[in-house]
Image (cartoon, rainbow, N blue to C red; front, side):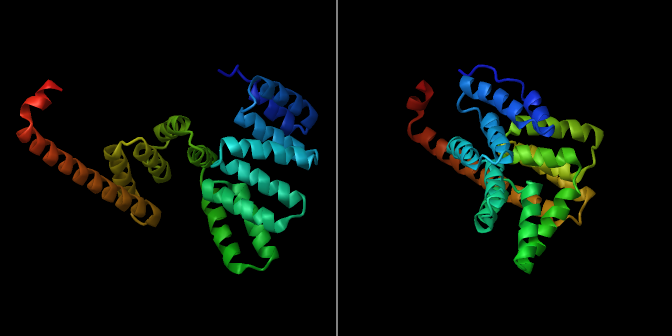
Length: 247
């Protein structure tokens, strides 16, 4: 079992103050305790990139991606690294991977927009700009919830989303997020109720309507499955009544 890591707030503070050497000292203490500590590997890569120790940064990221191959922030940092090294094509590829794994990474969309404008790729620039405007329209807390949910931190996302909805009970984006969380946890009834309520509050939101239709289809498929299971269970019960009673 891993020992408790060094206070990450101290590391974040050092990074914000551009004290990268200090931050790395703390990070390396963490990695001695737990070589697979994901936040420490990620922050080590960030510090190394800012110090222009590109080889170290890439090694930290490769290690991180071997542990968490779907981590959007890791691909984003790999993209930043290639951008700083002047490898624009590789950077674009990694920024795209970052947004595929975590569509709420605003920094990646910003960089994709800049690079698309530079290369005069109007279609890509327009797509990136739409995503940027969509994400910027969200309160910071909802953007954060989107990001951590996309990284699989469902428990924390649910907690923060419920806290937000207590203060903002008619925010349809938050309702949609909580519905997604409920769906991932298998609570399809709750998900349907939340999305139905969100559609009533904001019937012009095509994204919410789409999610509502998808959950209805998912619930329908689930009900069909249960119907089949009940049908076959009853059939087996008629054939082997005594055996099932012993179970």
